[in-house]
Length: 452
Image (cartoon, rainbow, N blue to C red):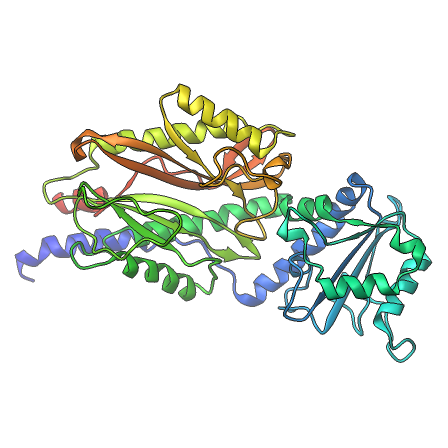
């Protein structure tokens, strides 16, 4: 072998070593289905009873028609049910601590192993009448249905289905109807111990796909565009037999005075990636019905550079400081608006130019729970921002700190970060860590290996 090929082969080998070992094991579809059903059964046994009793609700109705699914019903269907069928009515009745929950399906057949069929059309052709009879037999104190002015997640009962329900109930039962809002949000936002453990894997997969995308494995400076990287994300997710709940974005910040930061109200334009560019991505996956939402940064080294410039390292420190400020105000019972106001005030006192727009993650990417600001609502979010913080919940700690860079003619760089955090035992725990070093393209490790 010619000696001139040796440096190239050494670089290739080091790059392969960097990326060959990273993605954790992803379960085959059949195994995922088994696990999803186990998780669902655990939630019904260990979580839902306490949530219903906390809200004083002893009956919960979830009603949806095929292809117009209630967001709640999508989280309660067995793994092999990808949609509701015809009209699917789930009735959950709390018979008390001794007997537990009774879970019925007002349908021709069982809905998985949890909901037992309680309707024979041959005996009572009208599905609504059968539901009404089941309610009368149990005589609940409250009947919760999924209607809500504030949370879309708990507003899944369609207008026509609501009308049909009310039309077939007795006057006594009509008076018992209440919104399931707090119960539904509690169901969606609460994570069980097994789900918390699984989130470690989800977040690690997300981080490692980002590490691949923001590397010399994917990016050739002067050739690769931001859209090429976006579609690498999509292809990689498909290759791993995963899903993504939104189309990723990749954008560039650079010293060029004509290149401004892209606004939030539209997608970033396509750019060719060059040395000296600061890259930013927004990317998340769906796996085992759970979602991630992550934003991280990478820098493309110039030919004369062997490591990240010090001014960008300091900029990231400002972003990490803002994360610490915000999560330091997490306390059970605090609302998102309170956390936002306290965080922005403290950030200003510390000399940070901050924007905060954090949200829960879970069964949805933008999930149910308290909202801590939006990019265009830094004074507080009506409704969703007034909801209190609860334990065993997960959040996308999403924000940015604006930092002026003297080396870029005092241009302002936006350090945009988003990481998954679990709020447990009164503290925020970053599920798979957080970005404390900006990724470099190429990686320093590859360069050092080449020089040995």
